[in-house]
Amino acid sequence: MMKKLKPFLSMMVGALFLFVLSGCSQYAIFDPKGPVAETQKDLIMYSIYFMIFIMVVVYVLFTFVIAKYRDRKNFNEKDYDPNFHHSTKLEVLWTIIPLIIVIALSIPTVKSLYELEKAPKATAHKEPLVIHATSVDWKWIFSYPEENIETVNYVNVPEDRPILFKITSADSMTSFWVPQIGGQEYGMPGMTNELFLQADEPGTYDGMNSNFTGKGMAHQKFNFVAMKEANYENWVKETQKTAPKLTEETYEKLMLPETVKEMTFSNTHLGIVDHGIDSGTYAMKIREKYGVETNPHGDEGNSHNAESSHGGSHAHHEHHEHHE
Image (cartoon, rainbow, N blue to C red; front, side, top):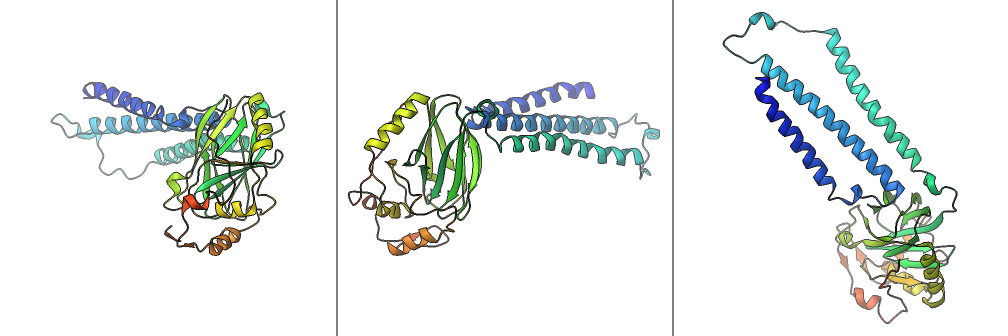
């Protein structure tokens, strides 16, 4: 019986491996472009392989029991004791095995979590670039306090340098995530969470909010643009010279629950409000000021048009190209 089942079991296990690995190749998290994402991918793959191994062992034992103790004509009843109720050895075994599994999964997980709390080892000697990432329904605002630059729905960073993101929110609880670079980290009003990321090669990577925050959540995305160091420095200098100033009126309109295009400014909102301290009252007051009513289901009753609110009434700069 076992000989007949062996080809089937081999085919099933092979198909399982093919399914898992082919599915992995289609997801960005399995194509890391930075040390943080690489660490997270390794941890995920370790867990997958470990669980597949456990599953194979269980199925093999299950098949063995079915084949050995099946009802058949030449079955030897001496091999079967229906009065069997207790085995100290088995009880110890199936208590120890889960404990080993938990330990085997916990140790690399805890180790990785503590490792990701710090800047990547390869570039730990470099001063991290600090960027404040603020989520607002339904957009992302990035503030560079040292460079005095602010961008909306895109963030430029130099490659091979640790980036310290200080993540918060002006209203809804969100989750900051760049699958190929690393994440996720929650952003909440009234508090700031820190996340170290790093890009190992130039490119434009998809960033998003992975936490449901209403009907516009699917559009709350941003471009994470990794640039060569020289190109990044040139972008900073050009932006400081040519980008318009962020006025308080302009920033107020960014608090409205709308989607907007990419924007660039030569100063930040950090002098206007600190959302890491403010618990969402600033955004709510601004929406009340502009006649926007927000209900828990994400429907907004207002006469304010998304395009007109960011049109000619205030200066803004749309960023269309990213140079690597």
